[in-house]
Image (cartoon, rainbow, N blue to C red):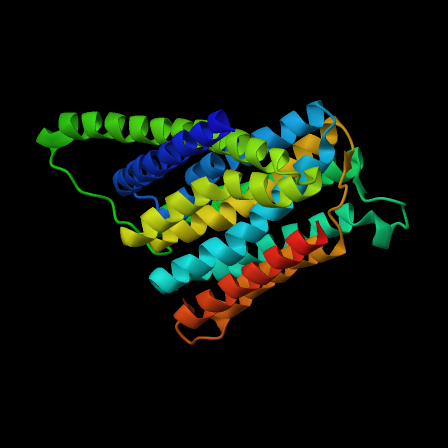
Length: 333
């Protein structure tokens, strides 16, 4: 038990340090290459934050513990969309840009609906248990490839037109400063790589420690996946997003969450189910629909305001919904 607690504490420290360094490095790179903070959040930071989820999914598939893979992704995405975005809105309301409302948030809803359709086979196919097969996984991977293509194309369009969603302008340096800028960029990339490494290792340690504590306390595998493992793997999203929000980079934070959720639903599940069909175990209709409903709320809430702002009260609603879902999950067992 004490070794599990030590792993948990050390993992939390690594997550905090990794989130801070990753945010600092990503913002510096965005300024240098004239790329918006939102785009950095949707790609580099989101992939880094999703790495613990991807690793857990693939490892679970290889070890044929597939219920952990599905429960981890569903639980982590619900955690991100309800609790993390809710906390961000409570800490500091922010405006949601047109690219996010027009492309990324609809893609989030689409990915949630697709995962529900391919995962809740009891309802859609009449199977005795929910199973995500290989063909469904390959379909998710195709959708992910299309999304990444759209994201890269949007980045190119921003650069060519000089427009940015929540933009970060390029720092114009004098010719005599190029050498210094080059060194600064090396440091920035080292911060990104080091931050990502700390997030991955820290997330792994948190999951190992928390899972050990939970299992010794008599929790079921499905419940551990939806709660302890999912929350542990989502801690990088919490630290990265709240740190970025407090540092005045809400687009980086929001882009990180939305990008990570899309990557989890399409890439992580797609790769894992392509390796072996994923049995969802106790993950069922309520869990899939909570994910879909969370995505819809995150899409609709900014549209309720003329300024497309995620407000304090909306953050409170999201947090309360997460608490209600967790109570239901614990009671269900």
